Amino acid sequence: MVSEETSKLELSLKCPMCGSNLQLIENSTYVILGCPHCKIYTRMTKKHIYRNYIEYGGNYIHLKWAELIKELYIRISGKAHQESNES
Ligand SMILES: [Zn+2]
Image 1 (cartoon, rainbow, N blue to C red):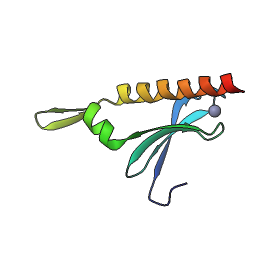
Image 2: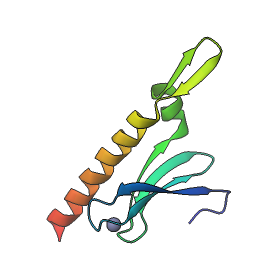
Image 3: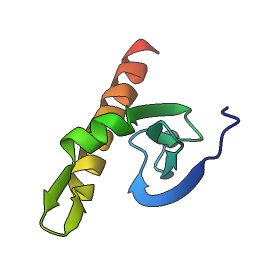
């Protein structure tokens, strides 16, 4: 898919279509949530994440991880819904 370096994490979140564990894929530009079985993916640019999901407080940087995953999950649920409507 992409030649640049990527990292993959398997999540305990389930695919809304097939129930498999979703994967979180990260490369230099995007964070991608998807199901390798259904081939549905949603991606968000890291730029967007830095703008919306990071809080700077004093000496620390806090990533609003739960909110980020929730947003990605809502997006992928929307995609799953669309695809099941089309078929
Ligand atoms: Zn799936």
